[in-house]
Each structure stands twice: as structure tokens, then as C-alpha cells.
Image (cartoon, rainbow, N blue to C red):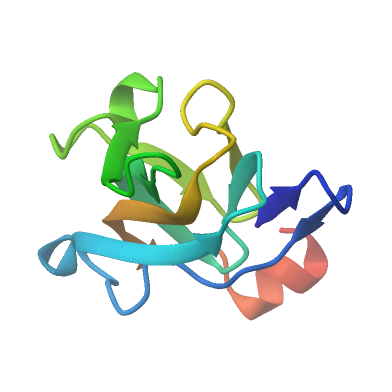
Length: 131
């Protein structure tokens, strides 16, 4: 999800960490987010546990026309070091772009490294009964 300050609401932009359902498939993905956003929210909506190793933002500087890559100030997300930020079903992580991405940025992309595992403890029956 991205927060668009010009429209004043969150907008869904798609799924991240696809087809990476075990640690051996862990890797980088880059997702295009657009230009008019101030926050990113990553939500675990599936019956899975996501293991995020690093999250970075890439943007094209509006003055130099060069791509810039920056990390967020979350220790476990700065490097691909197997120090994971874990999201379980129903949890989310909100990242603020203020101070990281300048207002003149174009072509903002999310670079995420990680994988997920299907949660064996959360089945269709247990999710319907709240168990």
C-alpha cells in the first residue's frame, strides 16, 4: 500500500515477495510505486509469515536524473544479513519516506529482499473459528 498525500488515502499497489515460499528462494524484488507518495505500508494478508531481510527505496532524482538507493532507519531492514523483520498474518509495517525521498523524486521503486512460509498453525478452519 502507498499513501498518496494529494488524494489523502491509502492505495493498493500489489503483492510483494511472490513465489519465494522458503528461504532457498529468498531474493531481491523491485516494485514500481509511482511518484506521489509519502508512506509505504507492507501488510501480511495471507496465512503466511514473511521474513523481510532488507527494504530499500530507489528513486530518480528530479534534478540530476540519477537513480538513488536509500535504506530505512530500521536496523533489521538495512542490509541483506539474515536479521529478519517478521510479519505474521494480520500484521503490517509502515515506512515513512519523509527525509529519505525528496519532493522532486520521480519513479519511486521499492526494493525488497525476503521470503515467506505458509503458516501451518493457521488453517481455513482455525481462521473461521478464531482459533
